[in-house]
Length: 129
Image (cartoon, rainbow, N blue to C red; front, top):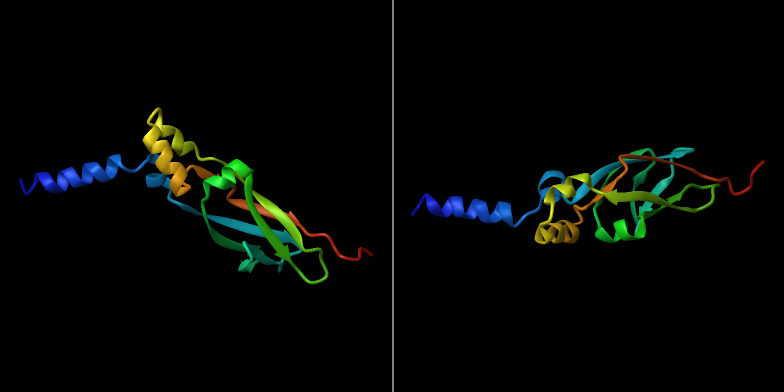
């Protein structure tokens, strides 16, 4: 009986988690760059760093529905620009096959989403020469 309980617990944990959540997690590192470099990276009003920079983004199912994660890049002398990091269906989630529960877990945790690993944005000067 003592050996049965840990095995049962492991099985419950494995079967209550889905493929994308297990294999790719609920966050992803994305490298954000700009031309010119040195722009502040703002997501939801919070500063995440300065371009070029690798930042950790929490995955969000709404980003899949909206087409991506909205960010702002701010650099003195350049327009304050809004950009979008593309979001797509995480191919690992397809391993869920027809299990609606696992698809639901991936959607709730955000693991169903995948972002581009590298994005580069062009900033426009406020007063072009």
